[in-house]
Image 1 (tube, rainbow, N blue to C red):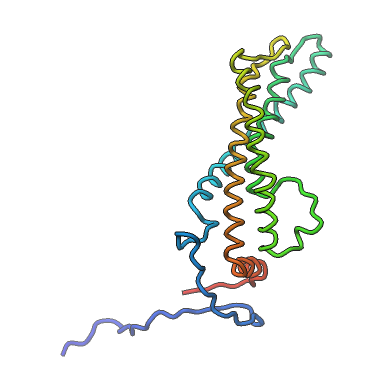
Image 2: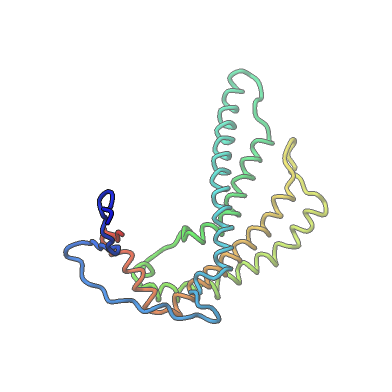
Length: 233
């Protein structure tokens, strides 16, 4: 017989090593998520919400750069005004001033949907933050149905005649060297359509939390209390 060349390696099955905190309590196995409506995926991960969230997220990143441009233009307007007085030359104009105002309006209008997605709107919170996830979701659902969605539709309905007339006459600034105003007014329609779309997305996600019940609350608590650790192969 011919001897084997080189060392013989023993084949062992792969081992799974789990490490965690020494005082971590053993957690019971979690039951799978129940199906929602006609899909096996949780409703808060529905394709509509993913699409709208991705759209408003990209718009939010664009608005961040727009804010930087607005700050730079505002700084130029301030410097040009005082420097122009010092040297006796007009370095600024109504165009730059109105451009700064228009950018601020765009940030405010187009950023509404992104702020809703990030839960960044100003809120006087006395009780909401102390509630469990399901109670907060119930408040959000009622607020969307009673306030957010009807208000967005109302603004679209009320503002449409004014915007239509502005486009019909090609409304412009009354100041010399100013910018046209009809494109900016059209952004009102775009902004509230986006806000309405994001409101529906948040409504569906909150509705999913209500339908899932205690599972959604346990996931939030687990994420907040999870100790450092991991699984290695």
